[in-house]
Length: 250
Ligand code: G
Ligand code: G
Ligand code: MN
Ligand code: NA
Image: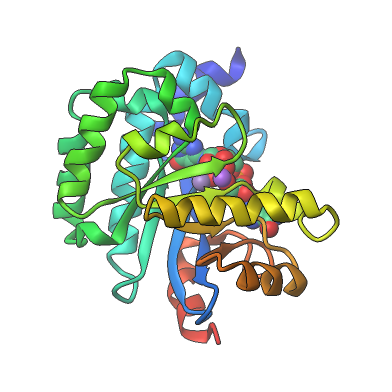
């Protein structure tokens, strides 16, 4: 209740900021992109992670202005990175209900002078509960400009493989729960391989989250997963460290 009141004030007061977590190519080790992760520097409670306030923002409708702030900030920051390093931005379903969503994304890209191909929009499967027609129209329009679409947390929730067929997608992000158990439980390993093959079938690339050990990285290399994200590579870092990370990485 308190947080709810604070939330509407926090945006105006500049209490939000983004951290960035690198995503690397598994074969080359090269940095491909960074995922933007929202943080709220609350004056009394300290830094709060998204699960503590994003659901609240969704309930109160503040997710629309907050999401617009995230998109603009991520594009402006990414434009300073060495090309063609990309940026991935998480977008909640309700943001698509905003009729100006697509034009706002395009205006952020234009303002930042960021090539659309350097932006990936991450959606989760919970998004499929909203108006599917309108959603896929918006995604298709963004894609026609070169923006990439990733399906986040894949393999959890109410996955319907059918969504892969009817949805304009470029990337599947395999949920980190699979990485966690993969070396211990052969069923998880087989699921990772299955998702990678689904990716081949639908011509979308696969990224796995939650890679924490060299062993896990070796393993997904053998399975042919294209990209990796996780603490082994780096925790999320402040925006002003991204340039340096790119320079000193390998
Ligand atoms: O930052 P952390 O690793 O705690 O992220 C937790 C979750 O919050 C992730 O699932 C991520 O998708 C979500 N998240 C992070 N940043 C944003 C954002 O800007 N908007 C939305 N809607 N979700 C975000
Ligand atoms: O929900 P989404 O997957 O978009 O958010 C990424 C979240 O996962 C972030 O909160 C980030 O801090 C967390 N994360 C990223 N890499 C790892 C990892 O290797 N291990 C664990 N346990 N969490 C991770
Ligand atoms: Mn994500
Ligand atoms: Na995820």
